[in-house]
Length: 139
Image (cartoon, rainbow, N blue to C red):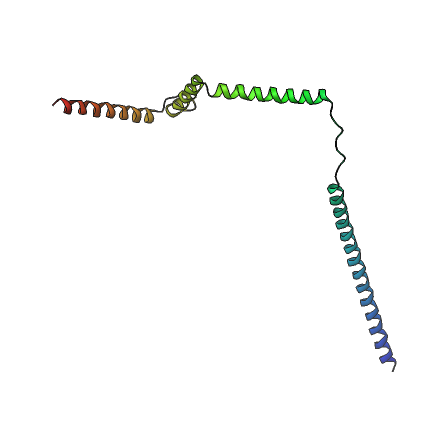
């Protein structure tokens, strides 16, 4: 009978240890969940604080308003001057020259012979076709 009591006592001790481990696990999970809830509550509180309207800025004086308007006028006048310079015919011609030069000149300033030869061939072909048309009209 003592063997049965010993076995029962061992089983009870094992069950007690399992229950203690489960209790510790539940406490850890509860602590973790409480921390998550606190973090979420803090986020909600921050959003609520951000959603509340701020106090309006104090009214500005006439001098402040006029200074801001003058700064805006100056900025717009500068932009209009930039646009005027951009659309000047001489500046447009210069930009087109630079673009055309970029086709025939590489980044080091050297001439691209293949492109120059292609352009020369096209010019010769156009002149040749013009001469042929003239001869046919005369003849």
